[in-house]
Length: 132
Image (cartoon, rainbow, N blue to C red):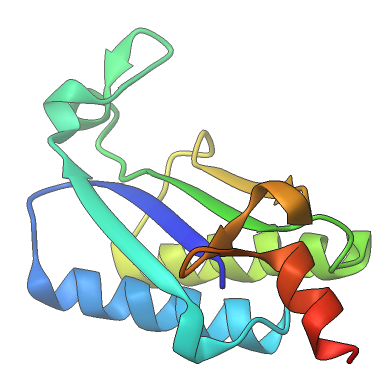
């Protein structure tokens, strides 16, 4: 049930959105073990002229970049799984976007199960209900 938010440098592209969404859905499901059918992905695009790294735009750097955050329930993944996930996503984004600025960020945010949910139910509630 994670929500994934992605910002990509460049012009909006349905093809890029599809490729990024497929990459993230596969990694989130295969590495973090999250259910595909309740994973949501939102993709936004930022003009490289308006994305600044070290005082220069990405257009000046002649590199692509992305920022990606995923919210997962705290305690559901190991450090090794999160490290593998970050590595897989970064390298996959290189394949989709081309040469990346190293200042491309991935943030796996662990959220308390009693403060996070979907469909009006918390993850904590879902966990307890599954044990009945």
